[in-house]
Image (tube, rainbow, N blue to C red; front, side, top):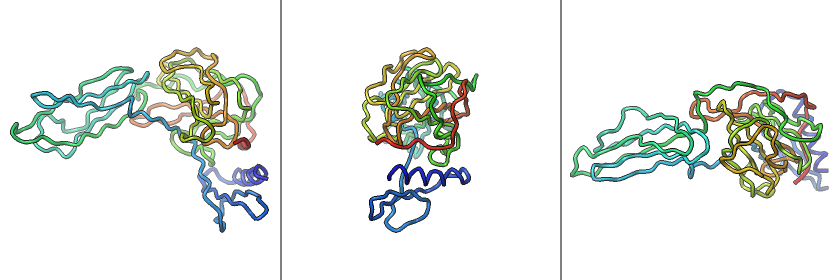
Length: 298
């Protein structure tokens, strides 16, 4: 009954314009689960969030080196990808050497840079300030060289269950042009394009704490990044820093994270200027494009 209710509601959703909606879920006295966009007594908001969540605070960080003359601010990038950074200094008190504008830089993989050295205007008084570091994966100066990608799996044919600008979850900047392909758990996932593995997650079970579930992010030579989401726990066979060839096996599909059922969520992203956003792409082979959603599974 759960699947029937969801399928009925999603059929309604797909017959209306592609805009984000609030979905409500309720269970009646017979145990039938229903999804609707109408406010219903006893219903709760059903939250589906397919956004990419990557914690980079341990990989990109601001360090302060104190010395007799003052303090030097250093930004370190421990990732296997370039990172665009912007450092601003606010609430300055008794500070000399601070720039008038934020400092911007593209920090290359596995490197660090000394951005500024500050000193007290009056050495007898305390120097205080508030640093703010912004950053985004990738180099915004790079431009995509292709929009055609190999299929990211072996087997099938499989069904495209949600395409670009889907109103169920593909309406945020990071995922607007993502594709969801329904496939059985354990389907071999391969690199749609060659590149360097930047980030992975491999230990999440079920819904877990990360909407993306287990994932792999691959940096391509033109600065774009292919991201593979909802992978099976323990199936990720590549490691961060590893170069993967197009078509090589990297993981198995799963149903982890904020997933409505077994499927692969694949998206291509790039840094557009202190922000990572999805960009349009196509697979170089046709796939079934029935306008429906992946359902089922846990």
